[in-house]
Amino acid sequence: MERLKFIFWQNINSMHQSAFIKALAEQHDVTLVTIRRGSGREEMGWYEPELPGVTLLHIGETDWKAMIRRNTGKDAIHVFAGLHAFAPVHRALLYACRHDCRIGVYAEPLVMNGSLGLIKQLRGRLDALRFAEKLEFILCIGKACRRQFLGWGFPEHKLHDWSYVTETVPNTTLQRSVDRPFRIIFPASCSPRKGADLLLEAAASLKTDIHFELICHSLSPVSANAFEQRMIDLSKGMDHIYLKPFMDNTKVRLAIEEADLLVLPSRFDGWGAVVNEALGAGTPVLVSDQCGSSFLVEGNPLLGNVFGPPTVETLRSALKSIISRGIPTEERKQQIRAWAERHISGSALADHFLRIVDVASRKSPERTTAPWVQDRGPQFIHS
Image 1 (cartoon, rainbow, N blue to C red):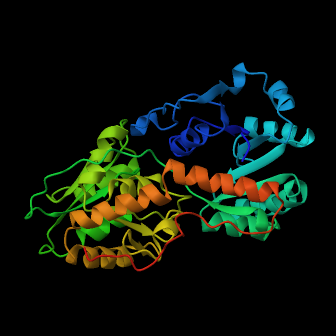
Image 2 (cartoon, rainbow, N blue to C red; image 1 turned 135 degrees about the vertical axis):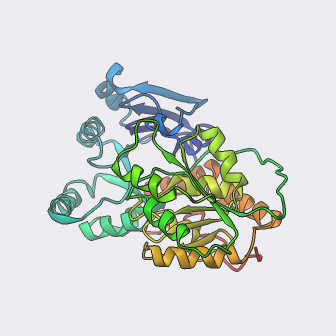
Image 3 (tube, helix red, strand yellow; image 1 turned 180 degrees about the vertical axis):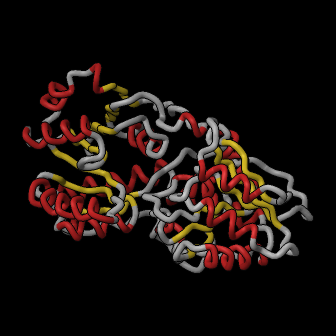
């Protein structure tokens, strides 16, 4: 493939795509235009990633219209974060459409509940009439996103499965005590959407003879809100359940690697990047079927389990079953790390993206296969 120019337009310099963008920049010219500086999650210990080889621009300090006009040829492709997610990005998208640029979009599923959901549904149908011909490809983060775009009337051959991607962490050889409790980690916000209450109630209701500990790095640095305080009160008096503040991302990655299971029991989650981090560290996962990242795990028991619907009962049953199998072996953890490097690393996503661009360039109706679906089979070894 000839060397191309890729211009990504998004809200922030997101760690959820940084590994992919860096890998892509090793082969092509990449520019990242952001609305805000930072990672957007500094309060959770996430810091702005470094992107060597990538041109970084801030939309408020850039003549973005002139840049779009300079990049209207066949060798330049603009990729926008969502259709309506961020007003400045949407304005740039409209301007690029008027100048007949090559355009792609990546998007997460929308929450479609209530009257606001009906409005979004109508807007989606109008978007299909307005943008379907203009867009060369849509990167759908999770199966729910694909279903939404299909329902609105976007052509199926332009919809391609996409994922979050996180930085690869060097493998650390850890010495684990053979008689320690089974360690579960929850490194996500203490909120109803992430299902923190489901996890704490399920863990608290397990029989006392089940030898485990639950560590939640989930409390905000400011004073606890009403929900967080209720969760703090629920965990009081339980010496095997720990509700702790967020740690910086470097430390939490080590904590994930030290754990035996990462749990993400979200009631709704566009993806859930901590699942990628866990798999990259070799740690099995348990995710609800309402997480976009369940797409990685379903049908591949090496990586973990999917449960649903997200309730205290279904989660308690899944936890009991997984804990009963015992601590995962180092062999299994190494297998998970190797799988993650082949299927959800920055280089794997860059290769997948270039296949999508190639299919779009040829206006081919063929459907690309996401790397995490490839080689899916019975490669599971017992815990």
